[in-house]
Length: 117
Image (cartoon, rainbow, N blue to C red; front, side, top):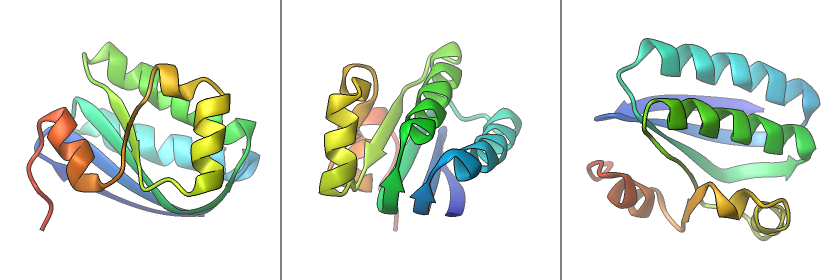
């Protein structure tokens, strides 16, 4: 599982890749929380375009980051979901609390960020 993070105004953008299973969810949780805690960010975007697998541990990781953003008055959005990740997003109930956008620009627009160049 790879991760790349950057900040756009007050939005932490985490681009994820590979399998989001129990081991990787724990590792990502620590990395994302450390970056978010050190930043002035309010919102979080997960770019899921390169995620090939996600299980309940991945869902838990997403929910935990949603709760962190909520504490700061922010929101969490998922973008670029594959069909299998999108189905999991809908069936798990994430769709009731986590925003979804087709593209990173769409999520930035929802959350008040600027366009990524």
